[in-house]
Length: 298
Ligand code: SF4
Image (cartoon, rainbow, N blue to C red; front, side, top):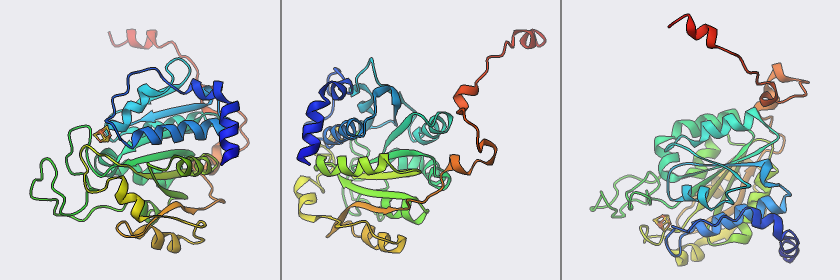
């Protein structure tokens, strides 16, 4: 880890290219600060230049990360609520030379956009997805999401949430995701390490970040995570072992890479019609003059 810090110091110029100058709007103590740092460190340590990465953000508190990235040198996209995955997947498939890192919150991802998550996993698109799971809709002032713990009183549900929360990593594992990890927003070093592993995965890498939201989620503050977090010594060998590791969200929360299929055949590698094609789809975009066609309908 000391080696990483030395390397980051040497790569200061590259690192600063990812740092934006916009005023920070996240609340004091928000887990987003640590997540943003870990993403920036991971891409720099893996040798990515800003022109080689596209950061795609959904709507939610995490989405302000789009403004935090260095404005002039970094490509970012800030999409519609719950819809970041199809847009990011399209970009990843169109130009596999660019690494796509998408992010979404538990609200948009596990409710409005849950269908997109299902099919992104199923297609094993070559990209990373970072789920900011703060267990509530923070941007709209703390309503319950599908990951809010049962019994917790939230804005809009003052008598407490009646349903059991979704376990996001377990959900992704059950759908057959080829890479699933769970990390905690207070541990930047560990997040950086796991994100580096995700950057090197061939298919869809699902990284669930358990994120503190001190403003609206009082049930799981920093102390709560620090008492329960249990880093995995090694990645479980089988999906069923990974599922066992992912299950406990209360007493012994296992953190790290829960599962990885290193031999996965991702979406692009399964496309028979692109076998042996040297160009990528964006190279093949052609311009057509359709003015004559339009005139026929005027
Ligand atoms: Fe962070 Fe919560 Fe504030 Fe949103 S509401 S910025 S998630 S602390």
